Figure 1 (cartoon, rainbow, N blue to C red):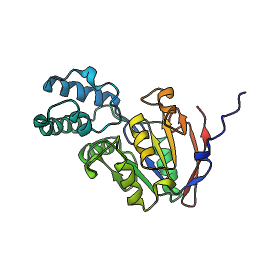
Figure 2 (cartoon, rainbow, N blue to C red):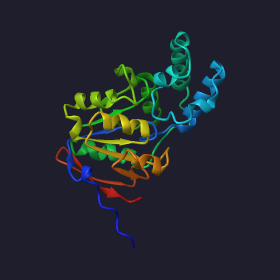
Figure 3 (cartoon, rainbow, N blue to C red):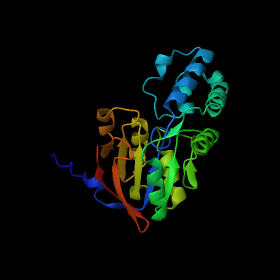
Length: 229
């Protein structure tokens, strides 16, 4: 039986807070995301192939690279409308509820930091009934969303914890790059939407999903023990 790989130095410590992405990390919304954006592309005459590689980027930042400035406001409003009105098939990912409950029970400051807008995040959290922390940072809260560091910085600020003392859990390269730029102390990636090799370039640890991630949460702090896959 093979021995688990040793943890990198960045994870051999306790963290004072945990910041978690939402879509692809806590909930599975990939089908509705693809459905919504394909509909949007058809309405705005955008080749869907241009969306490749954009996972984890905010809708506003994505649209800014797809359409001329005079169409962006309308286009952004429309994708918010499409996505917020379609929550069919969204589910909680393995281990997500259990991790959130364990962090809450141990008194670990925790925040969801998502590229979704506030209305979309509320719609998806309500649809799944996912138990979630009071602090939820969305793209609506910052001028620059992922891949910029601003959302992670705001999440740490709202929890009253330095970014360097925060553990981040993400499923997208763009989100990991943003967290690294924010100076977050430890980065864990889940392979729910992207390949392990892609994520490993940015993450300190890559795991199958949150069910495979082993953590010890106690007395307001969290330590990563390793991964089962």
